[in-house]
Image 1: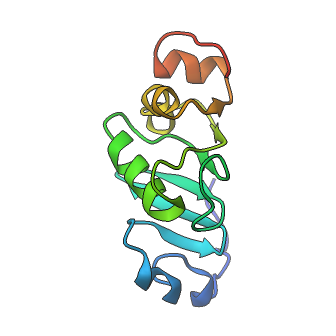
Image 2: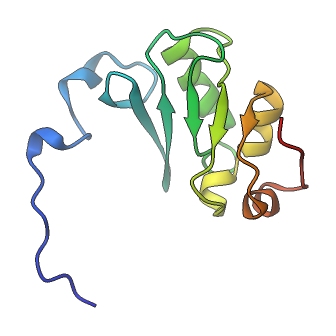
Length: 130
């Protein structure tokens, strides 16, 4: 099916280069005060929480592809504070490009994560929800 008409987007509504990104040293692009994302190759991971929120006061949405654990944890520490762990890791779906670092991050962080069967299959061994 072909799209008959594309919905126009106001240039100020785009996240690629808003003025708030100039101060971000963590590689994230800020969408609003408590939502930022980081592009990791073919996928985005989203950080939900106020900058400087601290340990267990923010949520990671999706876990990128395998090999991106360091990029995700460094961005999180820059945004939320040193050794700041997420309160939860929310998986939008279980495709490989969203669950690749899930097991490593949840083991490092000890964070609760949604335990979808497809996420378990893609991330490795079945695991208990924490």
